[in-house]
Length: 524
Image (cartoon, rainbow, N blue to C red; front, side, top):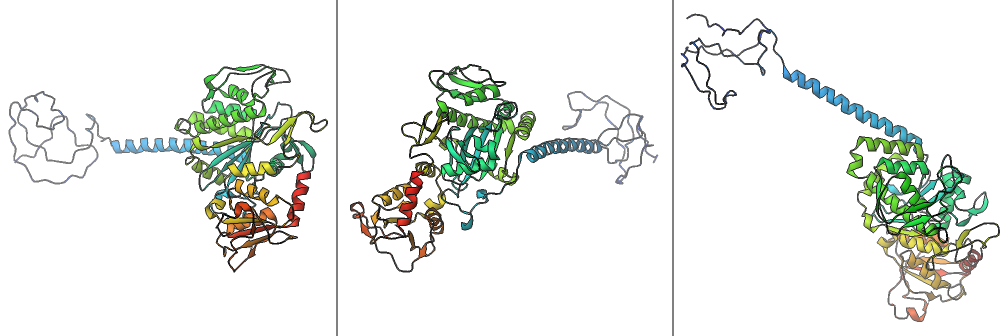
């Protein structure tokens, strides 16, 4: 038998290939015309041309791609695919690295040292609690004019956002910038001067004193950053309920007046428009922006819209928007939230129902807690002070604790009784009202069996209500006495309590010391 020869044009002078040896195949004569078998890549309805009989070639493993006619090299597509994969991977790594460096530089410029309690860590140790509301994350957000504005560090906007990391309850309360307060180390003045005088730490201290809750973190943003953040996310859609105008609205640059007018309706706002909408504050006869109350409500509305847009897929998956947002944050925002805290807040935000967020404003409305005017403090200008008395924030504390619900108190739900042993009529009823506002499970006020010189707390829970005991100890400034004997159902009760059959788990007896300190606080 003659040695089989390759077909015309086929060369075997290229690289040697390993082939699997097959048994010889008896030559067959090809028909003059044949139809390609089913599955053949050439089976497109055309018959193969007739050709002379040829001897079969020894079967061999064929390359994945037919080699180029006349070439001695076999192309290997798998190598090409590896190169393409490598190049794509390098591009992805480069983009990720670029964003990572961008974010790192931004975070390095905005994150400041944090020294307060970290309520984001989950269950808090009792020693870290500093009174009712400590179970929540309270963040002071301030808006300042920034470079190029008069009083660049005066806080034009002050609000506290409070988040319960266990229940995902969120509430926000705005504080008017003209509230007249004590600023430690600087005397007296409007609360917006605290940040200018002593930075965010001093502002936190002053706001905490006014609201009666611990401030855990701060965020400070200037006007330019606010505008750029809105623009970076592509603007926000705001429902303007009523057309607004302010004929004395200040110009962005200089000290001039640039009258502002905003039609009603669903408005898509860019950064400049959103800032004007948020800052408009004058009321009749020069405008209808609702003073600090209206402005604070609109600020909360815009901030919520920006937050929703920033966390939307349209921003997080858009490199251009994400880059612009990172650049904006890096240049115009300062905070003591650490990177781990920011990650936890981002996770919490996905579990928060925005429709259930509570928004409140401190103002001089008839049902609110402030009074305003130009003749309250000589030479102080237009200011706000508490209705309960200048520097008396007791009613405001109750109001804030009512909306900043502390889950440690509600979860333990300890039965608390307050007895009046001070000799001052009505003082126990006032304490009961305050405790109820903070969501304690408190019985009606009762009279003690005698007059007490000092306030006493009796703990009958055998250590089962530790958070409630800690909060009450902080509130009244005394250490609870652990009792082994069961409590009597009531002390000498008022008529209101005569029908109550509940036995207290914690009994507070108010002494003369509490009455004296309460009167001193009221007179300040």
